[in-house]
Figure (cartoon, rainbow, N blue to C red):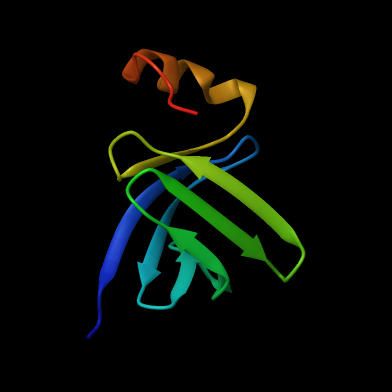
Length: 85
């Protein structure tokens, strides 16, 4: 089974299209920048780069994932009316 998902990732320092292919995640523009250490679902993405750098992203549409930083809070407040703890 070759399940390929294409998502947009908005990091505080970069934006890129990411390919999630079974157990490998990589940047479309740089296939050498890949990892097997990640978790993804419809609302959350966690990527561990080079076994040491971890990035967290949130999504409201399962296509666009925004890094959990102040720069992108607008997208979440605009699309969610409340948060459940």
